[in-house]
Each structure stands twice: as structure tokens, then as C-alpha cells.
Length: 424
Image 1 (cartoon, helix red, strand yellow):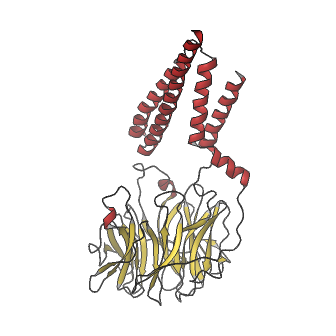
Image 2: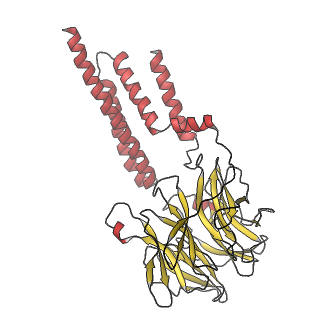
Image 3: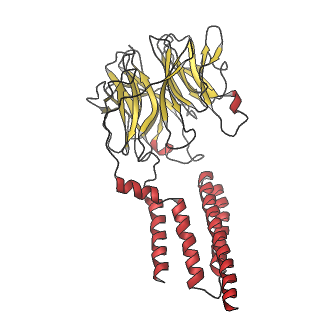
């Protein structure tokens, strides 16, 4: 009976740790994060890098040398850097434990960091204007962002703010479903952005939102849209044609010439391309290859592609020495998971079958089966009344319970035959 108590205590402790602990996939991840930037003179690139429960912004030479850390997060994630046009400033997003992103600016060497968005806002993307003084960003109320899908009553809108955090203005009041791939066009004085499958432009002079010039000229399912420095071509990612017949779509990089309308495919990597950005003075695009697509944490390789030869090269970053993770906490986090909880639950059922009810070996399995069936019913109720994703989670729990029950039932069956054989 003491063994049963120990296993029961371990099971309850493991369940509590799973429910209350931080299960962030990036907690112990070391590697590149999404979001890239290239300085106006092409002399520096910027990227985010995960290490020891944080993600900092770094800059480097385009060949990966002279890597310098320019932000100092404290258990938060700094991502999506952008250089100011004059190269003196940098902006980035800081994501907290509630997934709320705030907008920060700093000198290009990382000094004088300053939060310039409000705590009540969640910022999804941001870009500099050409005057080095104004930042445009897409945002939504933080409390709305934290609501589950279907509950939120507000969407994304476009804002402007001075680089010192003053003179914030809400430029749109349209509650867009998404507001992605922000691009500032100095020539047309407009902000181009993607809303779901529409490409829109906001005119800074007459404050109007209208369809972007190339809306309808690109595939509907494009992502990571970016304009060339001359604004005569657009790069984007979309589903590779050969992967449409498979269960796992692959996203490659494409380039569309806005003058002659030609589209060419730049990559064929059998993975997924994210965060493309043009160099300004050479005919190349810097991008990230999502090499373990679609798993978490996302693992990236930094690459460039030549727009003329379509030759892809990997950029090896000469990263400085990074802080090691807490070995004990890391081992604990990795050892307590759904598999270990399932194992403890199965062992508990088997021990109860052997010692508690020797005359009714199937009783623990039938009780567990009842709990599993109730969990299945509960999954439909939760999906209908609370959240579909929560319902899926309860359904996966029910499936795990049923698997453990089958194992316990087979053990009970074998135990009954064994006892009969001993009695004979």
C-alpha cells in the first residue's frame, strides 16, 4: 500500500506541475528567432536569438562576423528588429509571459532602450518612416488579444508614434482581422499591409484605406510580404505547388516583378521560408529557413539567395559565448510530460488491480473507462461552450486515459489467467 501511495503522490505532483508550470517550448531553446533586418547601407544585419529563457536582439556583419548583443531581456523575448533609415536607431518587440508584445526603441548599439507603446496595447508589427522620427505599428487592445478566438470584439488598427514615445495617434478605426507585413512607402506616402488575404494601403495624406496597387496580382495565400528598395518588385512566401497534394504544406520564397508581372521561384528547400528582407545595395535577399517545420520550438538557418543566380548560401553566425541553462530545472521539465503522467497513471491502475481488489481485477479498468468516457463527453461540451481548442485538449486527455485503461485491462486479463493457473 505504501508503493501505491508513493505512485499516487508522484502522479498528483506531476499533474500539478504540468498545469501550473511554465511549459513554454522556448524556455530552454538556444537558436535564432523570427524577424530579420538589414541596415540601409547593408553593413549590418539584425536578428533575435533565444538563450536561457530569453531572446535578445543581436547585430552582425552580413557574413555573420562581429556579432554584438544590443538588447538585454530579463525572461522576456525580444524579436522583430528594424533599423532606422539613418542607421542610428533600432526598434524591436518585447513579448512577456502573457504573450503581450510591447514596442521598444534603442540606439543601434543597444543603449538608451525605451518602451514607446502603451501597456494596454499589444503590438504585432512596426516600421520606421523615412524621417527617422516616426514609427508606424499595428496594434490591438492587450485584453482583447488574450481572449480566445471568437470572443474578441476588436481587431487590429494602425498607429503612429514619435521615436521618443510622444504624439501617439490611432490612424485607422477598422478592426482589421490581421495587420501583417507592414511596409512604408516614402514615394507614395502610404503604409502597405496584409489583412487576411487582402493587400491594403493606408494613405498618410488623406487618411484613406484602399486596395494596394498589386492587390489581386499575387496568390491569395501569401505570407511575409516585402518590397524591394526600388519598390519595383515584391518578395513573398507561399505554398510550393508540389506540396499541395501532401498533408504538410511547404512555403518557398517567390519574387514578382511589378513592372512586367513576371513571377519566379527563388527557393526549393523542402521546408518553410520566413522573414525575407531585401539588401539595399546588392541583389540578394536575407531570410530564415524553418528547418523543422512545423514543429516547436522553431529552428532556423540564416540564408541568403542571389536574385540573379538563385544560389542559396548559409550565413554562419559567430555567436559569443552564451549562458548555460539550469540543468536541474531543465531535466525536471523534460522528465515531467504527458508520457510520464500516462506511465504513472497506468502503473497506479496496475498496482490497484493487484493489491486493492484482488477478487475484482477488472474494477479499476472499468472505473478508468468511465472516467475516459466522461472526458470524451466533456470535450464536446467544452468545445461548444468554451473554446474549440480547449475541447481538443480535453479530447486528447480522454484518448490518453483510454489508452492507459486498455493497458490496465490487458494486465488484469493476464493476471486473472495467471491466478487461475496457480490455483490449478
